[in-house]
Image (cartoon, rainbow, N blue to C red; front, side):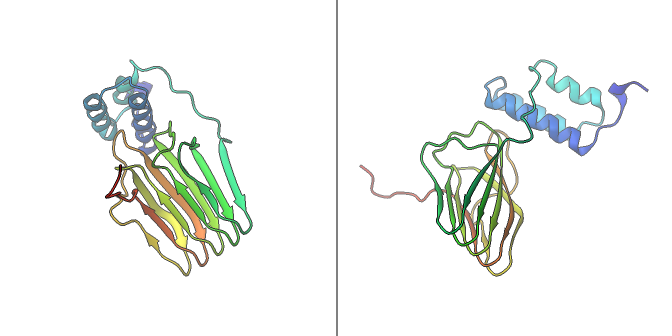
Length: 185
């Protein structure tokens, strides 16, 4: 049996979907092309099916596995906002402080951003760009709560998706969109 006829795994489908989303972000695919190809990628059964979806795209270079940016504080607030470069993977660690990560005006070249939170007593607020999505299933708060009001949890083609993992013992996690300003000049 040739490799092209071997059955693919969910991980193979996901890898191809990520490559298609990356091509869309680079402007190599239009939104309708991305949506069509993603539908086919998610239902592909063989490597030949997947290969046909990406052969006209340049090979995607895998990012190094150690491209994690770590933000650490013992008791101060960790804050990022405005025009800042968001890494593919972000690890936030604090014993007594909290974190405020505003992604709404940030430069984000990745379709998926992974944020790992390790807070003992602090809370975290993450502000997404309008329409962004966030999966918080991998986050646990022992004595606090998790709030994602109006923020969808499933990824959408061509839209930023944030995967949040980690723990806090006594803090909360709030994921939201920017507040609307009623009176602007």
